[in-house]
Picture 1: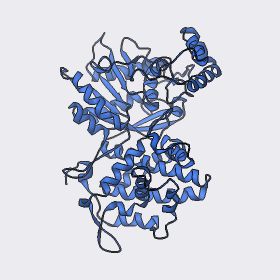
Picture 2: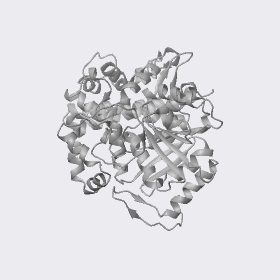
Picture 3: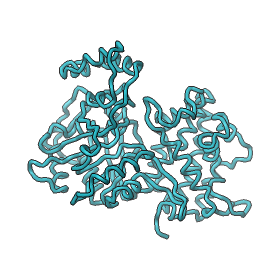
Picture 4: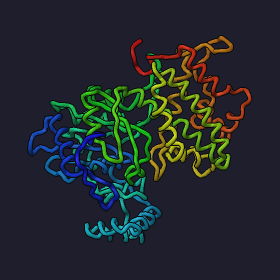
Length: 466
């Protein structure tokens, strides 16, 4: 429902805690989108989530809660790979979660699904992530039960006739999966609409340095026109959104689709705005993950010192502001969304959590960046992408004091240190404090002043024309 409309709202509390509008207003939104997509009576709108991480699963579950009961008008499915087994410790924890929630317990008993969780708790049965998801449990978010979902493990079956595809994959997996999907779309007359939730980035250094985002990867892999590919992001934590915490997000892309989709996705507790600047918002979603890892390290190494964390925040935000001046012609317009997304990620995001665990020695880099119970830590690949990009000699800028050409990364000491810790593994996590305490480091205010008073904007970095 649009903000400020006078539609009467009936709040129906569901057992999972979500609140839904009256059937009339919800059905009207669904009918509007069906009409826009040319759907006729008896032909359901087919929405498919690809990837079942925390946010992808919650997104599909929110749609199922809102629209799933209109079975003749919409079909909502989610694809995930089959075969991932659940270990005994996770099965035991899941059993505790089930028994702590009367609504979930009753639902499983009613669906004749409870016994398998008892058997798994006793070690007499192996559970798999796809069967958990069917019952409303995301393997990366066990403590937050969702509604039951229609799960498909065959990718071709899931996507071949989809009208809307929601990309919930990590950026590092987006290319290979959508290249496979493109094979199933060769005979399609009309292309689907794709909403990407992914926040990672890649660097492409030839023929000239530029950032590649998940929506661009999807466009290249499938040939779906850019007009049909959108990005949705915002300052949010998936479990909190499903638990009805107030949140907002932006859907970015072509006006043809972003405005009706913003209306379709909007809920009383989840306000969706729309914006035309797709790639820049997408890149900012990847940038904050870089600095969230460092924030987690600083928090762990200083015993959650508020003073040390504020020093880090000052430096990392000044670097992000500097980088946005390279990427955007009007970077001040990004300040609010970027800082909000950064703030929530530093508070409770998986990238900050990862930094903490590394600093405490509870995780090691050798374990990789796909972590059990958390999913892909996208900030690691983003550190590599931004460092490589900002180190490229073709992007040299004049040092404001020494008046000599330098790579932009030389004005980003936190990014440099994260690269040396995470990518080339030259230093341990403790070195992040060394970077903060370097007496030669510029005042963060000076870095912001440099960005604001020098013409650093490089349109080519986002594939824009000069």
